[in-house]
View 1 (cartoon, rainbow, N blue to C red):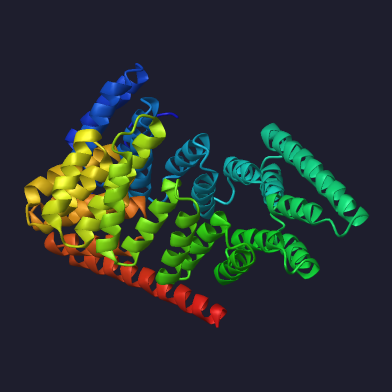
View 2: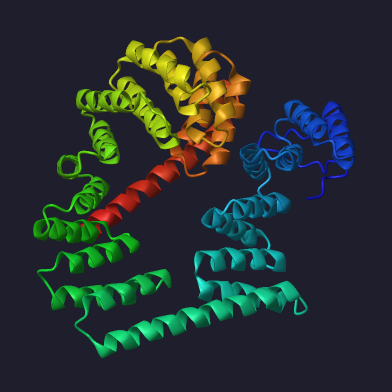
Length: 484
């Protein structure tokens, strides 16, 4: 991960590349990095960013320093911001994608590498990275195509050749395993367990249509068996076919009304359908069947909150706080934090801001610096018009969770309300960088840009927000058409 020897003059969305002071900080950072002093490098690059907030290379170097220091979240945020400022900054894409890969976030890595390929279709390294991501995700055919393209671009690339051999071997082993299972099913085509095992192997091989065909055969063979519908439901889940998954789980609970897990699945898919009351009823059934499961009570409480049945949600979360208040192990501690978070959020949503502050204070006493506690505290302060306190809490929340675009967006909005226009613009830009598909972040950015007198850029941001909203509406219309 080499640092820039000197800034290349990349400019950001507001056109301000590093000036004399910024260049001096960049030189200091480069010298410190060359000497292995990454703490000093990070400090210098942070000062370069402050001097020229729109300079992509300063952000990129800051990301590198943070990555060397093990500040993974800070590095990711800085890489994203650098890409937002300079969408052609190839090194940022590569480093960000590799960092995601090291964290096991292969889908995120794949998305980053594919964006980079749109800019540089002749980059063999990128095709290898894409192939690696596909290989880890089990999409072997796609991995083979990527490695083959890398070989076309660089015939002597031994890494591409080695990885291609590896994926071919994995594909062969998977095919042989499936062929064995298919033969076992042929030997006894009435054995439901053999059907289920083969369905699962098809799903692991991303052969979803083969899995669905077999699952439907199971239902035809034993239409009164809850196990056949359970296998069918799992297959529909893999295909993200919401209505069919919900219907299959409905069959399971009709045939096995004491199956708490099936009721839980049904609740989750009823939520996906937007059927709040049916989801709540399913979660109540599941919770009644397994009263020892606090996880089901969490699902019920969250469904009540999402359905805007705030008083019921508040009571449910209070019960969970009380239940886990004497937490002794790590799992109980995590459950207590989740209960506090749900309670504070429900109180804020219900407009009971003073109570939300009280709960957030209790939450922070038990879990200092918890980002969700700080965020709910900030939200309550914000709603009460206590902007200075809200900003302090939002800033602390962002330090604890730097990759959260919602925190950045709300902080930008509060900066604007407090008259800190430049800070508002910077934070709104960060929110957009962290989630380029977040329409509300573009709306906030537009508001901050208007306040900064940058009308043309504000109009561009509002146009992007409108495009995202239109895309969301079109997707919903498509879903409605499919359902009908």
